[in-house]
Amino acid sequence: MSVEINNESAIPVDESALLRLASFALDHQHVHPDADLAIMLVDEGAMEQLHLQWMDEPGPTDVLSFPMDELRPGTDEAITPAGLLGDIVLCPQVATAQAETAGHTTLDELLMLTTHGLLHLLGFDHAEPDEEKQMFGIQRDILASFSRSDTHPE
Image (tube, rainbow, N blue to C red; front, side, top):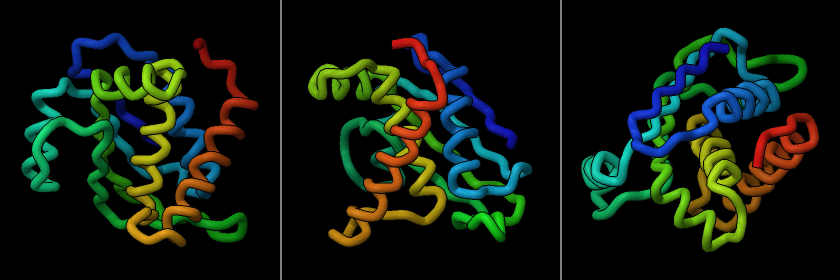
């Protein structure tokens, strides 16, 4: 898989952990090994501009997803075709505040947000209760499985 990470924020981030998680999650969802994903980390000002431009909502948010080829999860028998999965934009400053509130590390929050953004790229949503249950269940499963398989620094 081609996963490109670009940190334009002023916050140091364990980019290798984000890369390992993204690769793990894509494999978990049976996405073709030649699919392309970009992850960008931006500051609050840049995130606020994107949030306003694309969601018509003021203020910075934690994660935005921009799907490209509308790829969907594959199965054991049939992986998704290769293509451009899309872009995930993260805001480490917002993630840090949320991590403090949730009582875990900024890295754990960024891993969760990356998984969340990736699932949006694969067509999952949480607008309806059934959709939310499905999406958040898959998100928990990916994060728990990743945690068991990877020793990421706290």
